[in-house]
Image 1 (cartoon, rainbow, N blue to C red):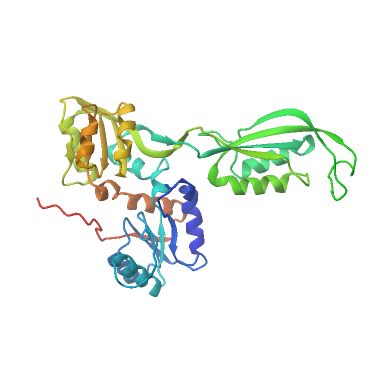
Image 2 (cartoon, helix red, strand yellow):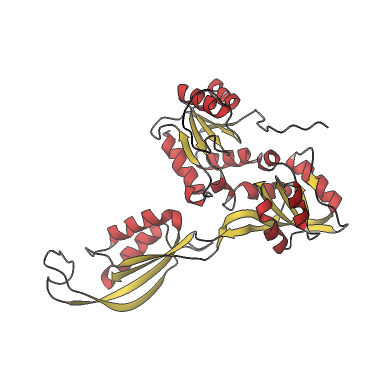
Length: 365
């Protein structure tokens, strides 16, 4: 298939608009129109992984972490990033990164951790703002159904588990066509009064362009009266981390053993234990210290994440147990998640998981 077919689908699952401002997710190397025969999924894109892709005839690598993170001023074999890029380009291997946009969707990286731990009743830990927008458009009564259906088809009006949501109010509009106008209703120089309906719909920011294009195509007017508002509402399915419950309470020691076994970790760095039971669990894949206050506010008994610095462990202030399992360890099942996502849409497409452990951190036990 074409590379763009896979890219478009991945960006439906995890839109690029959901990535953090510092991130660089998306197509990093490759032509969207090139043919893709087989893909290799990895957490990190290293020279060794690219060589593995070449050996397995994979002309696409889908990585969680972007190989290109900061600006490149030259492409010479001075560091592992440049060497990896040169090898990929020379061998016509495309590279796609799906990083914080996959972190920030429900069903993404943190949800996979929750699944491995057996959490139930899961929800986003820290919901994002400025993801939702509202479209208000004024439509003559004769075309209300046509325009509203076009909005729904383009993805507007979906709220949680509901779709085709809209608010409609009746009124009338006035306008006077100019000499150069080609009005659907009325004549140049004469004021018109038309019975209209105001349609209001909510939509995610990443769908704005397609929704506006569909609305304009369905609307009969030469000049359409509409406006788009940015909403401060939280989006319950977009944000960082996940909170959920264990099926049964565990002691702190039992939970830490469960965590080690479920996440295949050798070492857990943690704050002091309180001899209390564990029931409510907050998780975040990767560097998650920024969510500690959210985990405490959520009522979690333990917060599972990675990359806590020494002084950040003090921030628990005896309100929660921090369990730092390591960056790679917390995200390793992202490969499994990506393969599940791809096979759901393209069941006959060949996709492999790397056999290379790219974790740069080793443990002497």
